[in-house]
Image (cartoon, rainbow, N blue to C red; front, top):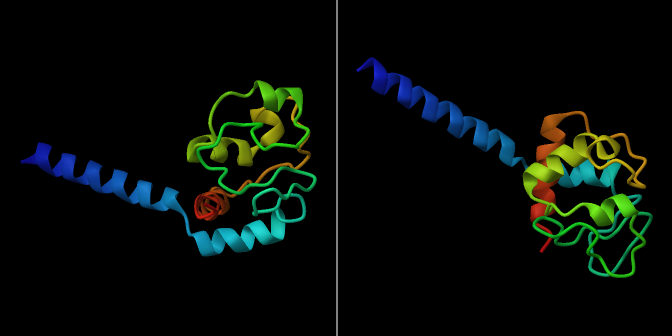
Length: 123
């Protein structure tokens, strides 16, 4: 009985953590517009200081045509999964040493989850 109760509580905890990590796309769009939009476009083929982020989730790094990526980003082979994006957005220069992006990162985990949820809508 206690084992089942413990197991049920663990499942509930894991489920609530997963839901919290999913984020709110509308809130993410607002954060994106305030923080990211000056340097990144969200439409196909439009690069700014940074590459277009259209369809970025699941994409290989340094894959946008006609964008001059750093050697560090070209060497990065991990696809932009939500987990990889979370680590990168928390500290871009710490996550991929040698990148051109001078943004210090989004310290707030909720903001990162929300931005990632927004980026997942860009398809």
